[in-house]
Image (cartoon, rainbow, N blue to C red; front, side):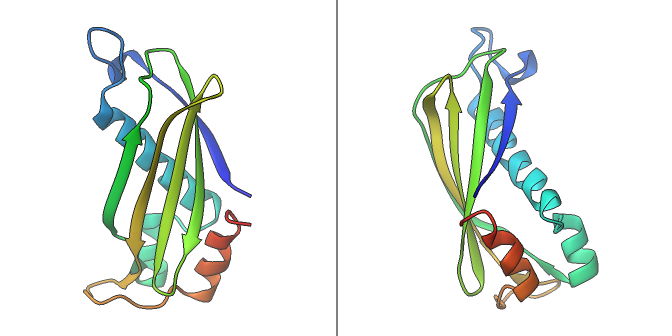
Length: 133
């Protein structure tokens, strides 16, 4: 199972040649993780307020395979790989059946105010793993 959403490339996402700027693509990818976390009941802001933990981004890696243009509908698929104290978000973006980007975000579970990793809570682990099965 995975989480997928559609990103419509807007005029404001593009350069004068109607090609999407890579920072706007990264914004769309990050917005996908926000939407996913809300969907599983663990929004990033509630996680810090209610559970006193966070999943800060520690590394990311993306490969852009093809350009996308204004008006394109990009399917962004997110799956997860959950470790002991970390989670990797794995992304694949497609448009008209072609892969336009792939990438990963590596996040580590830390307590609010802390700088050492802690195990991913069981409830969060179960919610995150629901996308990897």
